[in-house]
Structure formats: structure tokens, C-alpha cells
Image (cartoon, one colour):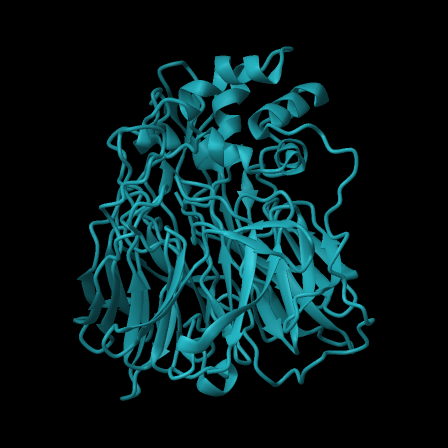
Length: 612
């Protein structure tokens, strides 16, 4: 299971079975405290402090129209509002003040900068998902990196985490948020151009392109209710919206990838959480890739990661019917191989028995039809749901697996000698190189971490023609309380030689001192420019290292308060999920991740090179 499962979702699978007509405090004490106050670090359920950093509107929206609406469909409005008020410690606001300040003073007529100028489009810069920004696009050299200075901060109202990376095109910045809004900002100043409301929160990166057959430019993205959108990039007007999967637990966490007029949308789910309830018929979700016409949103094909439709397999100890195979969600952006006419995806674990042969795997599908071309499984028999780490393990599969799925995109890279490979790191702590020209044949495998449910390599690696750069999480918790980070375990940044798989450079874990909620773990995606690799830490530091030898070039502590350009209270914190974005001489990074023991926060920070 990816670490992006929202706090409200975890709250609901603890509390949903027996909500009654009573106050929020009584609901929490009776049905939720065992999960959230139990002090079991292995359960990975966030404590009260993380939920208190959320806004009332965010939690209520998740329960009424968000990813857990299906779980709370039998609850009254009063019960949902009572829960949201108690877990956040906030009363229902009379009116939202979000986006009241920080609007640009001049109306947008066109793009402030050329569209073919500096840009970072989508999750991995390009459809290969290498997270490598060339020098002309970066506008930032290794010599300039030590002079990076904060230019502006933008705060997401009521958020406890900042989990959507920005996209930079034509001088504009596009970004989603937990408050079910997508925004367009001026990339240089951070002022707000327009705001677009979505049905669910948007954590996926946004892709930009001309809308085929028109003179419009559009942005494409998905939300946590499994909707894909196309929106006018200059006005924020909706062009189309398509529901890509009807399963109630479905969501889009990976960035849709655009290629030749087709949008390839990855589908993941929260059924690992919902499926842990003893009265839930676990499990029926299958991951998939959905191809949509970019011009209209019309489905072209849907390819499931598990070809077999889930069927009844038996009953649990409480007599609830169980189903399988299930799972193999896709948490990350698809990767396009134009030479092979293929789209590559990486999958999560199975949710139930029998374990799928396509879970914890890299899969290749034909671009035109969705036909599966090949599969390469990394960890077999990895059937897992949240119940496996909970007090009641009724729905945990027998002989459950280690939860070693893939949370990042495969990187398609061409070496200097012309050889091609797919390289990807796993939560097991192993980095894999596969041959895309030989049915995904394993070229090499190298271990860089111990691995674990939140261990190994999490959100994303980066590669150039010579090396792949991999951050290691291996986050661990103490037994002193719920999700208390262990400040002595985890971390490490590695560069592996692509030709051999051997470790060519290593940065040891960085101790985080006496600060609270401290961990050396590096869970966030890394980013690369010529000569420099950037990596954010769970302790809240963004750091830049010399790619050749790992020398520290620059660091910035984000775990503090900021003055935001939009007038919202701004706090930095743990860096997890997305990695930094570099374009046009500026660096952008998210800060704040109030899950898994990390410091909550709600900011996007923008840096530029200062004067000597």
C-alpha cells in the first residue's frame, strides 16, 4: 500500500461499522481510539495531531463526496459533521476565506513566457519519466545552486499536507490540492490567476498540451474520485470530465500521461483500507490503465492489471464472503515507449488471495489497444490489506505478503552506447533494471535498503544516461506512542551505474538532531539537473548534492512558518510524495506531510538564485 492513503480514509475504516447518533467525541472514543490512540507504530494509522492539522471542510468533504463517501453513505449529515468537527478540533466555518487574497492584479491574456521555453510538464518532465531536467530548461547550474534563496511561498488553506507537484509551462504554474481545487499561478510571483473546483482532491501531477483539433491549450489531471479532467489552461474553464472507474474505492494518484492525442490514466484505490473491515467483502478492485481521447475525454480502451475478474473464494471467520484476485493498483504515472508502441506501468500488491501474478510488477501494454505485451513480477505472493497491521486481522490474507509494491514510475532511459532499459526502485529496497526490447528481461538488481511497508524507495527516482539516483526511505517508528518516528533509522541517497547496477555514489543518512518528529528517511521523489541531485527529507530539509561525489551543495529547512503570497497561514514540514521541480532558473518544492508521523504543513515554496 502506498503511503498516500488519506487520514480521513483511515479514520473511516476504523469507525464506519457502528456509527450511531452520538457526539463526535463519543464516536471517536468508542469506534476510533483503538486505531488512532493505540500506540502501535506498525499499524501506520496517524494520530490525532495529524488530523487536527486538517480543515473541517477537507475532512467533511472526504466523508460526503470524497474518496470515502461510499463508506459513509449510511451516515447522516449530522454524524459526518460531528466526526469532522471532533477530529479536526474546528467548528464548521460560516464561509470560506480561501483564495480571498493573492490574485494577480492584471488579467491573463496569454502565456507570460514562450511555450517552448523552460518547462516541467507532468510528473517526470517527459513521457520517459526520468525526472532529469536538461540545462537549457533548468536555467540553473551546479555553481548557482548554493545561492538559491526563497522567493515566495503559497499556502493551501486548511491542509495538513502538500502532496501535488507543480507543472510549469509558458510562465504559468498549475497545481492541485487537498481542498479539491486546481490553481493556476504566475510561476515567477506566485499570484493566483484562476481556481477550478474538482469533485475530489488532486494529488497527481498535471499534464499540459494543445487540445487536439482546437486553438485551446489544456491541462489534464485526475482526482481522488477517479475523475479525469481537461481544463482550459488560460481560463480555468472545464472542457470535459470523465469517470474512468466505477469501483467506489477507485482513485487517481498517478499523473495521467499524454501522448499523440491520447491521455493514459492510471487507476489505484483505497480498498486496502476499506477491505480491512470484517464485514467488507474483500476485495473486488483491479488496477487499470484507461486510454482517453485528449480532445473529448471519450474512452478508447481500459486495460486491467489483473485480467481475471474477481470471483468468490471463501468466507472469513465472521462469515463474510471474500473475493479474489484483486489489487495491483497503479500509483504512479505511466511511461511511454514510442519505439515499441508501448505504455509501461508499475503495480501495487494484491489485496486478497489468490495473489495475482501481475501484482508488484512492471507491465507493458500496447498503446493502440491496451493488449498486455509482457509482465515482470518483482515480489510474488504479496497479498496484503491494512488489517494485517491491525488488532483485528480477520480480513488479512493467510500467509500475507510484505507490502512491497511499486510506488514510482518506471524510467525509460537510453545509455550512451545506445542500449535501452527500464529502471525502477521498489519498496523492498531493491532497484531493478529491465530490458524493454526483450520482454522485460531482468538486466540487474541491486539492493540499496532494507525495505518495508514504508521502506525502500517510495515515490520516485531520477536518471540521466549514466546513472539512476535513488532515495531510500526505510522509515521506522518507536514504541513510545502512535507513529512516533525513529530518529536513528532510515535514509541514504544512492547513484547506481546504469550499465552494471553497481553503486557509484552514496550519501549516508543525515542525522536530524533534537527536533521533534524527526527521521533521516528520504521518501520523496528525487530530481536531477546536470551535476546536481535534489532530495527532500521526512525531517523537512530540501538538499542538493553534487551528482558526481555526493558533496552537499545547499540545504533549506522547510519546517517553519512562512508568509504566504495568498495571505493564508503557512507552515512547512515533512517532505514526502512529490519531488522538487526545476525550470527557468527556479526551484519549487512542496513542504508538509502530516501522515506517518511527519510534520504537517501546507506550502509550496519557490526559490531563485540570489546575488552573491
